[in-house]
Image (cartoon, rainbow, N blue to C red):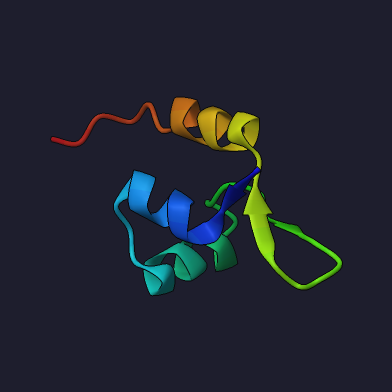
Length: 57
């Protein structure tokens, strides 16, 4: 499980931009731990990356 700051660094995105994408349902799934910390599983992040197959022209 990756911490949110690790994910943001890997995808090179600000926290605000990530939460905007999340609000639109276009971000990797977050898991909230009992202590309130957020995590993203490596498999969810990899699947999200694989789903971004739209080329940017």
